[in-house]
Image 1: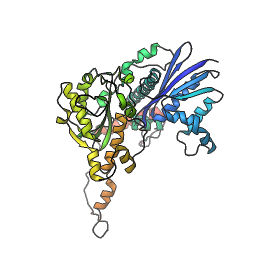
Image 2: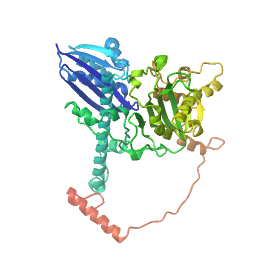
Image 3: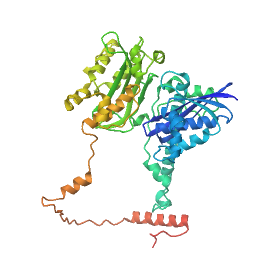
Image 4: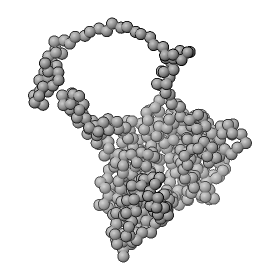
Length: 475
């Protein structure tokens, strides 16, 4: 029996949002790379799809050794699935994919393994790269489809072809409601161009050049990066074009607590919020501290081996400073993060970040609101019933996402205005009776000109000639 090793991974830009899956398949003699994606999905669905497609690609009689960085997939297929079957998949999320995965595993010899993601393992990194490539291809296809439909709509005389909208189909309506998807290059794409990936195998779904599409749709509030962004800086453009002061929910991971001369930053993550709405823009960077991470690895899970090929702070300082400059920085125990950032920027030849940014400390806010209580980020998540996320290891971008939910909850939640309710209230008197005012307006009557009547008559004749019958407007 032949033995095949698979590394499978999923990616999602927003959850739900644009997603991709990838499978890196290694046999005794060769390797294969396959990928794909969906325009509106979740990370868990992409993780499951990667496993399904990877297994389906392999011969039934081969022994499969599968590595996934998703405990959801690994434990689901090895531990939980028997219970799900007994209760007939009741209350199980993604039952369609779980049933498909269970079906493709039948009659196969499979060994399931978990591997920590983004820890520098070549197989897992390649699978992650393929997942992002699948997302890029899906977005490009969607963009091309939208453009083709726009051109088609512009070229058609909709009034002549379908004056009452009777022939509009669901697809046309969906296209009109689609929101343009913004793409951003990621660090994996920058390290490996899609052309390089394609050269290693003929089995990849057709590749596209890595490029930053839809750059014109980026929010004007987001600083524009240099033409050649550093390959290890991942900046996601905004999906919402909002106007107002920028707030950046930020977190860092470091080698320790002493910013003055010994410890250094190894990860920075920040997400953008304007008018209490997350725009979708974010920045994420791993940084080589030029020293061992030591015991701090137990907290953040980032190893020396993973960081060895990452840039030093001086190499990414300009772009990071440009993205952060002028925004209000929101951080939990902000003094810790700002001390490290100020020191790093000073070493790199910049001014301190605190001189060009306002700073809000959510830890100080929490202590003022809840004196004498635990006010760690985990404690606030439980207190405000923020959706749980896996924090086995701390990560800068993950903690920033959690903190954004906590900050909105602490400061009153996301405010919405019920215009109908306000309007109805305005019409009520103190006694609760509706007040209406009758307004009489003499509306002018505008008659069609001779030219307009002639154009209308020609349209009626064109309609009859095309459809073989007179339209309702014909006399």
